[in-house]
Length: 127
Image 1: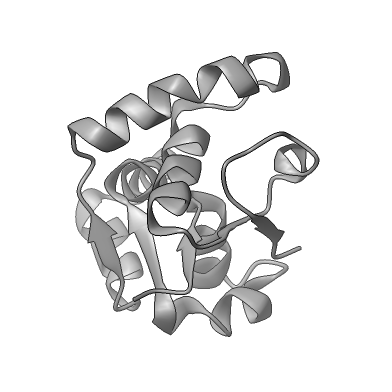
Image 2 (image 1 turned 135 degrees about the vertical axis):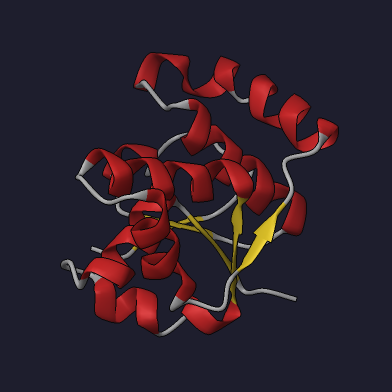
């Protein structure tokens, strides 16, 4: 069982050597990510100018379990909008939190907005 669910920001910080990458490195081998958040990471890399092949290669350096976004996770992600709407959390943010709640492990993010919200899982910041 994994010890943490990564948000796309955590994965991108790790592969890009961004601030906080050292903290992500301590848990990367024991983490999972939602397929939605993995798609966000690919999207960010492509938006920054990488081809899909380069984005794949950049993320392939991490042996990471990408968890399918199934109906149950979709429902839980949708339900979280009631708790997070006023704070602007995205679909990807809520997908990460829903997976963390289902797995009963913390979510790791760089998004400080998540702290202090009434969420179904623990939030840890990597920077």
